[in-house]
Length: 77
Image (cartoon, rainbow, N blue to C red; front, top):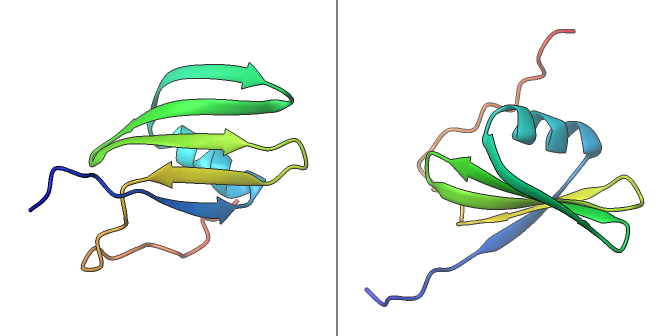
């Protein structure tokens, strides 16, 4: 195995960004040129969550593990 770490990004909605931030420890947050970058601790390492000025967002982190089940059900409320 090589020492390189691969990253991927996912475009998400503002609601999905809020859910991501609420479910992880925020290590730092910085504002630059109208966007906000959050560094988050996860069980798999760290992610960068980027809130863009147009209301959309990106989450950058290690690739999702294919075998891990994702819960895509909407939460009530």
